[in-house]
Length: 86
Image (cartoon, rainbow, N blue to C red; front, side, top):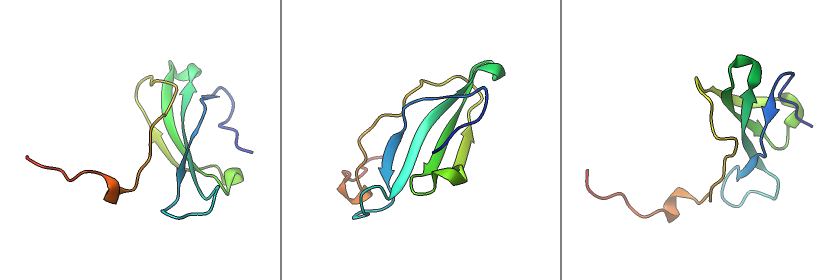
C-alpha cells in the first residue's frame, strides 16, 4: 500500500506499463498529490506499481495547484504519427 503522507490528498492514479509487452501490473502509477497546508500546491507522483512500499520513484514538485487527475491514453512512441514542420 502507498500513502503520500500526512496533510496530503492523492487523486486517482493512472497506470502506465513499464514497457511494451510488460506483464499485467508491471509499470508505474502516476497521480497528482495536493498539499493543502502548502497553499494547495501539488506534486506529480510516480510510483513503481510492484514496489508501492518503497514510495515514489519520482516526485515532480509543482509550484502551483494542479487539476486533480492524470488521464490519458498511453501508446508506444512508434505508434505516434511522425512530426512534420518546424
